[in-house]
Length: 349
Image (cartoon, one colour):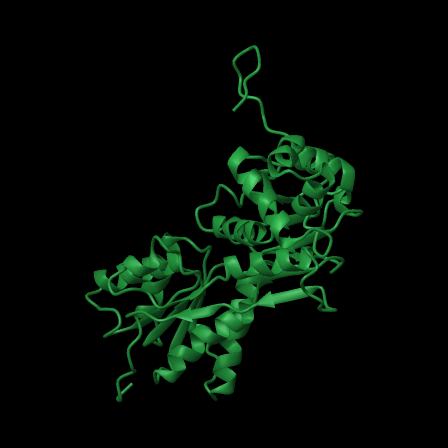
């Protein structure tokens, strides 16, 4: 490789590629921009690609973006996705599809700081990103920042309040229905639910999961019993306290649908403290499929998985124009992950 007077490696140019391949610079440009089909012979194309590999030539992506007005970058702005242990799978799913389609993700977490978010979006616009994924660490209703109103954008793991852009989020109701239906199919009828938020909360997760629980009971002809419902905040301590209330209450459940896996962990611990076993004495189903928790409980926790990577891929497909749905709200199915925490209900129950 030629070196300049300061000893630094000289980066090969398109002219170097053309010289080595014995072709014109225009032919090299056509091949590298994938525009030479029918205009450059297969043999010439192969010589050019061989020269590119031999010289370790890299195209100047920034210069290319200046010419075309578009870069291969996709912005990813979120509150705390990149640094969250579980929601980070959203970014993973987006990165995978971006790479498959020749794009690169430019990601910034704002941590709820509006000024930082605005600065991040402004920076992404300066890089001429193709579009922006506006993500959330948890499922909520959001309003798209005004800075994104004139740039292609999608909302991920949240729903845009006015449905003004495509939004991709978990189908919470179907997830709650799936969890409860699994317990009903195992013969349980005294199924409790420990939800992850109080009734007055407007967050979609608890509202949807409760709606799914009630729909499954109704379809099975099992009367909804308020005495079998508790409302917590989605933490282990709620599972501990509220499970004890249920097991010492007037109607003792044979199964509990916990609104998330942390609550389920608390339920396990309380049942053990009461001298009861999962699933022999009480079956448990969780929600989230937290990879550092659900598989490692004893027995492994049957739960409903949040579709992080599928949501991200669908959102990016929409941003890149690979989807053509007319509606802007796209709930994504949450699938059941069966493990060992559910057993058939005993006949006398």
